[in-house]
Length: 203
Image (spheres, rainbow, N blue to C red):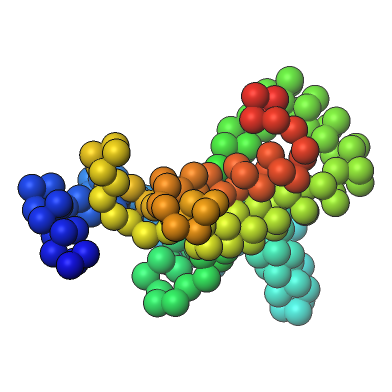
C-alpha cells in the first residue's frame, strides 16, 4: 500500500529535524537577557531624580515618569519578551516584540551630528508617518505570523530536492510543493511587499 511505499522510499534517507538555532547562541542570548533584565530592574529601582521633590507623592510621580519614559519602555520591550518563549501557548505575535531589541542600536548614535539631524527630520515628519508605521508594524506582526502558520505546510522529505522542507499543497490541491513561507520573517517580508505595492526587486 501507499504507507509501505513511502516507508521503503525514505528508508535510506536520514531524518532531519526542523531548523534550530545553534546551541551556543542560545546560551549566550540567555546570559545576555538575564544580565540586561537585572540591569533594567536595578536601574528602575534605584532611580533618583536630578531635583528630588521633598514630598513623597511627587517623588513617586517622578519615578513613574521615569518608568514610563520612552527609553525605559523601549529597553523593557527589548528585553522581557524573551521570557515569553518559555511560556506555553504564547501568541507568536507577542514573541515578535523581541524585534524591539534592534532599536537599542538607535541609542548608539545619540552623539552623532548626522544621526541627530536625521532624527530631527523624522520627528518633524512623525505626524505623517505615524499611520504608515502603525499599519506596517502591527500588520507585519499579525499577518506575517498568520500567513506562516497557514501556509508553511508540514516538515517532510522532498524527493526532487533530496532534503527535508516545509511542503504545502500546490494550486491543483493534489501535488505538494515547497512552501515559500518557511519562517515568520519571510511572512513579514511578504506583507511588507504586498502592503507597499512594490516589487521584490524594488525592495
